[in-house]
Image 1 (cartoon, protein in one colour):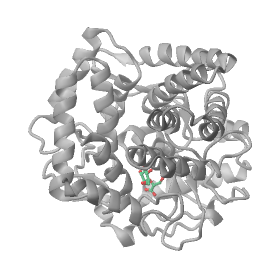
Image 2: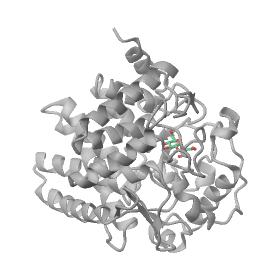
Image 3: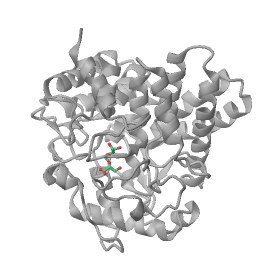
Image 4: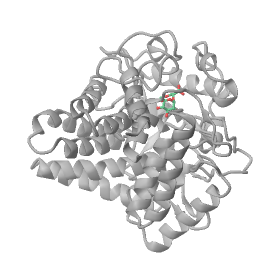
Length: 416
Ligand code: 9WN
């Protein structure tokens, strides 16, 4: 009997707030979008009903235009900033006004496979919600039809203070209409969190979009941060493949044709972001028109959704190995040793179990099962040694951030 499996399940039970799972107590007291998709996949291994419930509760927050927000504020809490009064989205169920990586449909396919035949009734409304969300991504976040979807806020990436945003975010003013009253640094060491200056810019963007009434076209016009992003686009493509698979399974031929067209466009667009000289894929800053060359994990995530030529996959893996050399826990979210590398500061270096999960799937897809297995073992070992921490210092292996963290528990269950 593996007691870590029991512990992982216990964490998911403790973080249950009534059919949805908070990422961790106090630090993140609401339902987060991509956290819930990972958590649902964890539940699918032993409690399919609860797995569906997780996604159903997330979809309660879906907007009429199709967006699934990054936070659904099901119940009030004073332990997090910014709360609903800062977002001012005026939704029936209070939500934030931005979104997060679309892992949802990846989870949906996994749930359907775990549920087996005859589960269509429950999955169909979730399938419809996913399709609406994918349409939203392409209309609201790729109005020019490039195939890459853009983020208007670093929080939408899920990698909030990644060095990938340093240049683009520096253009965002630090003044805010809303007072910035951080709560996170009361729960976790400030040295492990984004800086105050980052928060002022994050909130400046929230103020700007609230003033646009959260209307996508107006936001697109006013945005001082706009990045066509390769990690999100790669996740959207994998989710799109899974959605297309479900559409065909449910006899939704027209949907399948529509989704396949989205997928083809995105597949070509991501491939065009390959930079052999960097051995990575890059995002594009839509304000400057320049490549985002910062060395972060995002550049490897296309492994997840592309069937790459051997030469390209080998080059990516060679680079990944170089970054992981001498580390206790792979995979670092920033290239070790470069100026922006901070092994304990959130998305500026640490290893995250859910990023590893995506990379493991991508490595397996692209014929590197041995490297995938190494990463899987390293992730499991980190968790078994340090517990279900939010993330890990790749140099020392130390578990950092919030403890008893839901998606780390889900990743453990999935990868174990
Ligand atoms: C802002 C919940 C979320 C994750 C993100 C992670 C962090 C929030 C914050 O926590 O972001 O969305 O306040 O720091 O960066 O990936 O979904 O776990």
